[in-house]
Image (cartoon, rainbow, N blue to C red; front, side, top):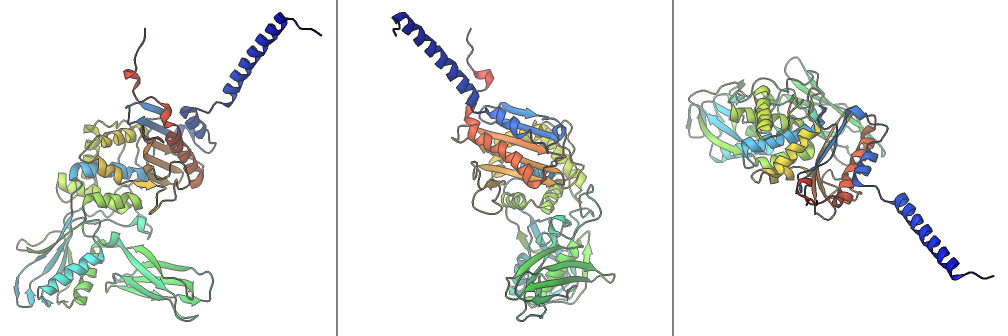
Length: 501
């Protein structure tokens, strides 16, 4: 059989054409999805409510919005509201702001005796802890003071009488996240109930409180069990006579480790001042008068001691790491005190926060601020508002670095680091999470893999049926896509791209 040269050429051309077609089909069939397609795919999850899901992503390197879905739909923020409070607090107070809790006295000091009252004046300090009170008591003792003839007074004049955000439910749990607020607060307004198994099976648990004011007593109904699993329950019971019982039930296994259960307190001012009385006694100072809580200190009171809190930059870091509702609401009232005056109200504080957003150029269309922590279901924010805030704060050299570092580095070694721990973007995401029933939110910053691009993102998943893990998976897919595929986009905005004619 013979094939002519022309036939060979024809076949060659056919095979070349066929190969090109195959190559085209192959490239089309196996091309990797674009960044936009990857995000679109993540948002096809059946558990999402499409109308109640919002995404907005902005390239900080170019200023362009690179992805947007329902960006101006008002939705519940949950705890990402704390980023709004964080930014406003930094703007009004500054990173170096410190609370100053003061000790005042009336009357005069004669030898080792104060012939007058000792006053603890609340500053709204969200970080005042029992060791601070113990240190103040020791300082008084070191000055030679042994006796206080008058009363021990708590001055709570700085804040109004609301011990919660007005939009919160009246019925509250005893869990730490539900702690009340106040001008004079201690240990995040929680008491630590320490539990240790007894030496023998059947022995009651060893229980102690820190701090341990006299009006609180332990009602120990617990036992030590044989080795194995055990569960101890702790609850606070406030009686009609003004006493408080800390009731401990259940059991812990013999030889098990110590446990600490935090229970919030019903009256923060009383808890703080009675704890201070206890520490004064332990330091060797006797207070002969009664305890009193007032809204104004006597005019003749003069300062004895002053305790300074850590700087605001460290307070907001702790607030956002632990997602402390208590700290966020304290900050709202602190803003009100500093900008409007006392007594601080939530309304005045939130008005200042709203003014900060508007004067900073942040979109507030459809936005409603009901508290500082995100616990209220009357809050309404948008994904565009949050990315506007992130972009604006990134560009503020005076407070932007403190704002960014207040967010957890997700997946890095350290506290609360399981999120993104095993993902490509681990240790690169700075973000704040938010969770309520049916609500999952995530807002923050992530770079591209090479670091050439930096993105601000806000993801709001409202009315979702995904559950905690399912919602996290959707959000993680989007953030990981920004990290892995973020370099697909040009480093100049569309308005800066060269135009050819």
